[in-house]
Image (cartoon, rainbow, N blue to C red; front, side):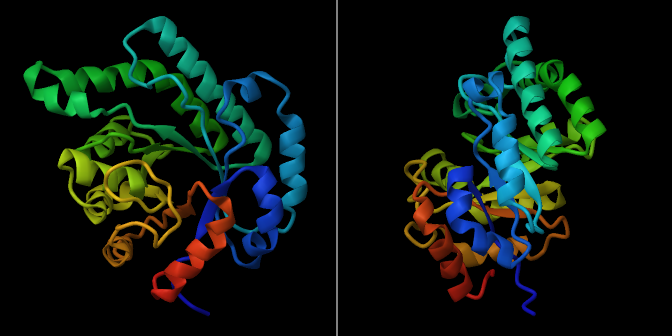
Length: 272
C-alpha cells in the first residue's frame, strides 16, 4: 500500500451522495459544509445529522465540520457581539457531538489592516488575543469535554506565526492551526506574506487541518487543484516533515472536480 498521504474533501451532504464511493474507498477525511449558516444552526438540524449517518455508514476517515463564521470575528471587543459569536460556535459544537465529528473549523481574527498597525498601538496583539479568550473560553472548555479540536483557519493573515501564538495561548489540545492554501497564496501575492509552504513550516506540528484549493495569488479562487499557481511540490515537502497528521481537505468551488483534484496530486506523486 502507498504511504502517500490520503486526501479528503469538504462538501455538503448533497455532494457526499455523489462522491460516496470515493470517500469510502480509503479512510478519507471529510468536512461537512452544511452547518455554518445561522438559519441552519437555529433550526432543526437533526434531519441533516441523520442523513449524514446514513450516507457515511462504512466511512473510516475522520469527520469534521466547517463551523459558523459569516458576519463576525472571534476577536470582537463588544461583549454583546462576543455572546452571539460564542452562541454560534457552541451550536457548532452541538452538531459535532451529534455527528461524532472531532474537528471544527473557525476563522482567524487577524487582518491585513491589523498586521500593519499592531506595532503602531501598544499591546495590540495581546489585546486581540484577550478578546478571543473572552469569546472562546467557554467554547474551548466545551470542545475539550466532547473531544473536538477547533482549528483556526487563516483568512487575511500576513504573518503565519500569529495563529500559532493564538492557538498556543489557550494551553489546550482542543485548539490548533488550520491553513487554507488559497488564502495563503492570496496573502503572498497581494500583501507580501511568505509563500504557502512557509505557512506549513511555521505552523509545524500545531497544524492539524489544511484546506487545499488552487488560486492565482490575487483572489480567493477555490479553483480545482492544478488550475492555479500554487507550488504543490513545496507544500507537500513541508507537510512531509510534520508528525501531526493534518487532515488534507480539498475545498473547491466546483465540487464536480473534487476527484480530479485528487487525481492531479496523485499524478504528481504527492498524495492518494
